[in-house]
Image 1 (spheres, rainbow, N blue to C red):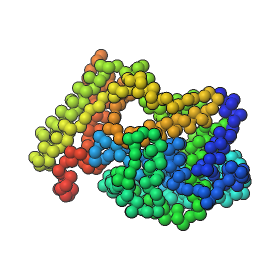
Image 2 (tube, rainbow, N blue to C red):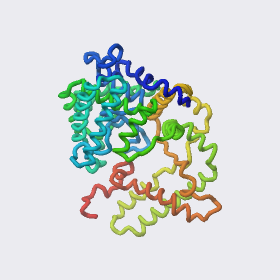
Image 3 (cartoon, rainbow, N blue to C red):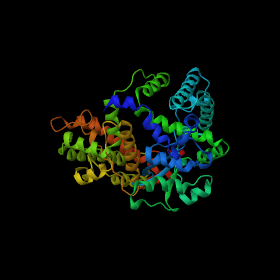
Amino acid sequence: INEKRQEQLDSRPLLKTLRQPEFRWPVVGEGLLGDWQWLPGQWDLQKTLSAIRAQHSKNILIRLSVAPDDKNSTHHILKLDQELLTLPSIEDYTSNTTSAKAYRAALLSLMVDIAVMLGAPQKAARVQMEEVLAFEIKLAKMLIPFEERTSENMYNKYTLSRLQRLIPKFDWLAYVRAVVESAGDPSLSISPSEPVIVRAPQYFKDLFKLINTTDPRTVANYVQWRSVLSQTTALSRRFLYRYLDYARVTTGTTSLMSQVDKCVGYIRNLLLLPTGRLFIDTHFQEDKKQMMEELVEGVRWAFVDMLEKENSWMDEPTKKRAVEKADAVLAKVGYPEFYLNDTYVNEDLKHLSFSETDYYGNIMQVFGHSAMDYIRRLRKSVQRFPAGELQKPFFWGNEYPRSLSYGAIGVIVGHELTHGFDNNGKLTSNRCVWVQYPMSLF
């Protein structure tokens, strides 16, 4: 990384992004004018949210993801959910404790300072960021608390056309289509009949009521603030140190992460296929796959044995269904074979072109790549292969007693197996009959 060049560029790379119509930040535009000026008549919330999601891998207001279908865990499906806020918890916005007040004050100060550092007038930044914080407080009061987010009320499977009828104040088809079809995969064509799991319908109803009664400038300021915040770590050190002052208050962080650690984190977390391939080539031992498959079968056998011999409260038909479900669980060990296909890996990376003098551009490329990587899973079967866990202290090789592996990663295997019968797993394929009985019986 050319850190000297990064310091010289300062905020210029981000300001270049903010010149694009969909990324203009109203309060900054008041100071810079010209190409940065935000024009309410030309602003479109749906287009801005979809552009940020597709290009920056950032969810704001709406969380759009591709994940396994809770009731058909071998297939991916689109999911829509409420999105997290800037501060960690709902209480940080709604409580009047000393710490919550300090967090909100630190957040407001950060918003004002970042806006001013990018060119916003000081007075306008203060007034408009106060309005943004008030808007986010209202959002916090609408969020569904964790304890109320059960598997039953979060599984609402609609088509996009049905969702449009239910919540008509947002163009859901245009939003999802803009994000998904930007991946450039012909198989990812989105129609009104596309299924989607809506995990928080009431949140979305309340969200668009709030948006329709809020000044569009405030909404745009909020959306762009959230987007800008995720990009400040790719700027010069004055931005990093300003964020550190905020983090000292909200998280207790006392020092900046080194550039090396940041780069490793970006690559490890966002370039999953090439880093997975490097791990396999460097560390993975093929004989571990066979050993692990044997261990999984051992845990499965013990689970079924307990079901049949030690379970006294479950009736025989239910036991039979439970055993069938346990037998139906697939053990995917290590990694999928395409990780060893050089052509496949190179195809995944062909759109990336890094430069040691463009740190910001490198990071934004990785964000965009990560966004598309997850979107492209939509028409693919679910792949879960924990190769990284097949090492000490979770997994022990042939030279050690098998009991060590059973006591370590075997616990994880058993834990994951029982998820097929918990509040979420009971709703998936091969459902157990007993969940239909009154729970008071148990």
